[in-house]
Amino acid sequence: MFKFALKNMAIKRAKIILIVISIVISASVAILAYNVSEQVDDGVKSTAAYYDMIIGPSGSSTQLAMNTMFFTEAPLGTISYEYVEALEKDMRVNLVVPFTMGDSYNAAKIVGTTPDFLTDKELDEGEMFDATYEAVLGAAVAERYGLSVGSKMVTSHGLSEGGHAHEATPLTVVGILDKTKTAYDNVIFTDVETVWATHDHSGEGEHEHEEHGEICAILVKSKSFNSYSQLKSEYSEKSGLLVINPSEVLREVLENVDMSSQIVYILCIIILIMNIFIISVITLLNMYDSKKEIALMRLIGIGMNKINLLYIIQNGIIGLISTLLAFGASRLCLSLMGGYVASMGIVLDTARIYSMELVIMAVVFVISVLPTVICTLNMSRKDGIGES
Image (tube, rainbow, N blue to C red):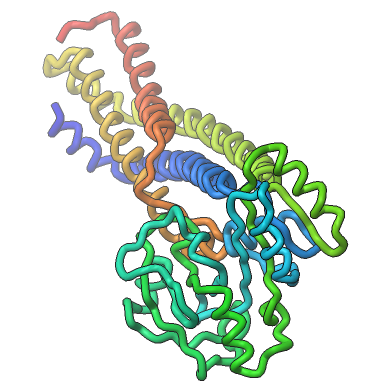
């Protein structure tokens, strides 16, 4: 029966291809939308939870959060390093991390900070930077440019290619991070002193973002909620400063993402409903076209149970192939989207599978088979014969 179903499908391949394409498009969109939404949500929550305060120049809260957490957007400007020194002496603070950005290596951004910024990250090889002109690479940067421990990098001014090259002060790769599947994979990390020394040496003391003694932001981890409240109140009152809670800011971003996801989900549901209609119509047309075929099978003694089983197997194969192709298409889209969304600080893991994706695939499979089951059962009742 299985072989006969395959032969029957080969004869009607044009209609079957139409069904498969219809199912794959709707199912892959649904799976992709859910996966991307969940990965973005997970990535934002895990990244924002570590620090409870970011201090930077006045401007956009979202821009400051995205710049320091995901290395996107341009820095808002600079603030004095004296704020870092003051916070380091403050008994209400557990951790203070300076952050500056303004140079790049090819398309990879360079972040000037301290080793504390990478406390929760593991090294794949080498060691953490602890001297001027040493750098630690994100895994994707090392892979993309063929760099290894000991490699020299000539950086350039600006966050994109084509800026003034700092040929007199190349950076030496001393370590490479383990792959994190986050924005950290696409960035180069060095000491804040390196950034200052690079521009002092190249005569760029008036550099817009990395002037000596200036940084772009400060990441703070306070000792308690009361300490956080006091610090936020104190520093918010200082002229020219912006103080944000990254979790609160990124939660607002997520709300917008969730709204977009809900719209996508609604569209996916509409597409799936349309698919039910399309598959049902095509199934009815197939069954109508197969009347002579069914009559011939009945004439040679094949019962309706076996005929029903034949068409159920046929559509079961179509449904299985379609759902598997839809899953594969969603992973292909994730891979193709990877390079684009990485520039926005989001890294998509094609290997990450959520249980709801499997539920969506199961629903799609049922939808692809259900019209045939209903149609064949209806034929059996009309025929009045159910014997094999």
